[in-house]
Image (cartoon, rainbow, N blue to C red; front, side, top):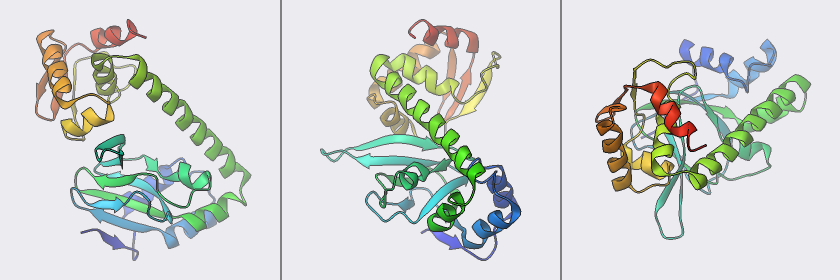
Length: 237
């Protein structure tokens, strides 16, 4: 059951909104307009925020938890396109391209808090702010580059590269020390995201463990040799 609260945003939610690249350029009056029409959605694990084909009336900012964006393939299988992490926004690309319906479904991977930003209110502010428009162009440009890299990753590289690249995306680029990460999605969801079979993902985890590069225990993964992991994917670039 999804719970929506329009009465008051928590201090954490308001702070996250202020840090959001889509809202940073707004002056106080514009930001207040967004706050007045925003809603907080509380989702339990496996709750659906929106379904593929449903009307787009908001863009979203994830405050806590995790969201998977997925689409049904013609054969009925679910294909995960992206896993949203706290601080990330989603659905804005569809809004700015003129789309009126969601091309994917958004489902909570864990108990999650999401802020729904009213689409028409936001578009009205964009039309009156050159600074906001420039920030949006930068945001969409970054997303385009990400999508190009994603296509390369899924079409040009093997399962080991895809998994290592995914694990390294959880840490900063300048961190070469052994570090622990917590997977934000079940492994079968990660397999779908990386376009590899679940059994292949399991074998790859075991292979990396045997090589002394990672230590895996359920959703807890320790990267034992970050430098060698980076070298591993650089050899295939």
